Length: 143
Image (tube, rainbow, N blue to C red; front, top):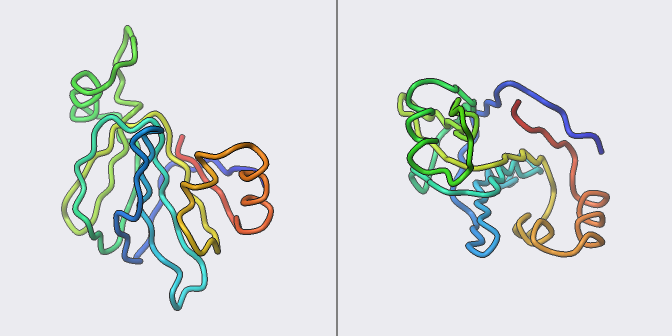
C-alpha cells in the first residue's frame, strides 16, 4: 500500500492516548473503530515532547512551522539542525485548543487491527508486512 502525503488531517471522531512504547519513542493516539468499523491511528515516532489530554473530541493535525513550533523544536529536539523551522512539531487542534507533539515522524493509519498498531511498528519486518497486508486500509503522512 502506498503512503499518501497530505498537508493536514481532520476527523470529528473521538481520539484517546491508546499506547506508548518508551524504548522506541512511539506514541499511539487512536480513534477506536466501534460503530465506524475501522480505527484511525495517529502514530508518532521519535517522540521527544508531548502536550496532550487523554481524550480529544475531534482533531485537526497540521505541521504549522510557525513561531511556536520553532520555539518547541529548539527547546526539545536533539537534532543538530543549523536552521530550526519547526518541521518536527505536529499541532493537534481539538475544540479551540492547540496541543503539540515534537516527533520525527507521524503516520496516520486507517486499519482494522484489534490490538495496538505499535506492536508491528516495533517488531521485525515480517510482522510489519503481515500487518500492512491484513489490516491496513489507508496510510497517510503529513508533509
